[in-house]
Image (cartoon, rainbow, N blue to C red; front, side):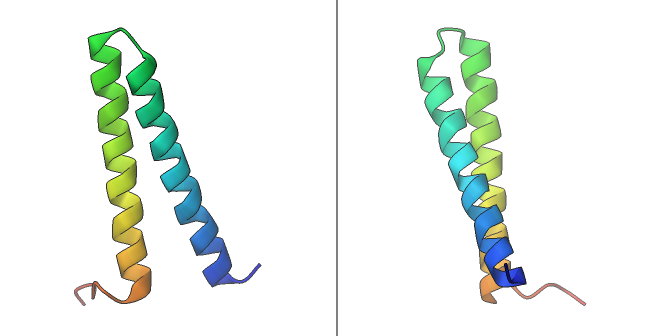
Length: 63
């Protein structure tokens, strides 16, 4: 697999995991666990979006 293909696969895995965490948070009855899972899902989604923009050239890292 090419470097680009590996990056896309990694980003998809991150997005899938974020969705799994969100779904798990909706199933739990423990408010603290729900909050923890939602926060983890949010961070993972945010990280995947950031990496996606970096790879797409939308964000230019400072030198």
